[in-house]
Image 1 (cartoon, rainbow, N blue to C red):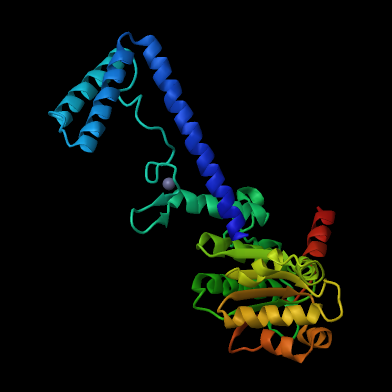
Image 2 (image 1 turned 90 degrees about the vertical axis):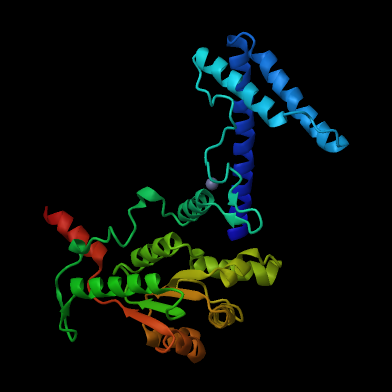
Length: 327
Ligand SMILES: [Zn+2]
């Protein structure tokens, strides 16, 4: 996904630069038409530039070139202001003064400009369905919709538990990459796992990390395409992205010789490469074990290398529905 977005951004920036050039021509044509004599002065300046370049090429030094240029620029600026235009009217046009719409800064070491980094992140957000108005973020996490039912055997309410899990997830995103490689979120459906995962995706993206959020179903689709069709792009992206957030493990089809094998190599190789894998599932560890086998579950539940977030309580959608029904 990263290279695809980078290509898109390079195209967008190239388009922007063309637009800038067209705007420069338009401004010049407009000013030349309205200000008598401006065209001639600009022509003169152009010739002066040419003679300077010729001088460099032939070794014949043009006389007082900088002074003559400065004088000419002064006359052009004065003419523009007298004609009701800003003195900078014919300056180069660009949106970002730092990179001048190239997307990069620095001469020897090229670095992505802040404007391009921001564009990159907002494109990732958009693709994750986390556009600015999606309302999904740790900041907007609304604990008031979570019931204050006491959880048996836990000595804590569902709301308190959810807030605790939220804090753990948030701390993990702030600490990454200095944090466990695996996050396992499990619990019955409707307890807010997917929402929390999307909060994590946003926080990681805003922190400058590369993120891919997909469902287990999509992952298996990518695996199927790779194995049967030789189309490996999507699976490679899942393998290589810095932070993979895999939603709803257990909802994907069980394809013999594929599902378990691909999942294992994904978790294993990502862990070895020091990448993050966040998994949400409605299955508890026992159910995971009987579906995927011991070696996958032992990776996901290895407390020395995994943050385990166990969700408990009543389905929030039902609670919310019940509340709405009573209003
Ligand atoms: Zn820039």
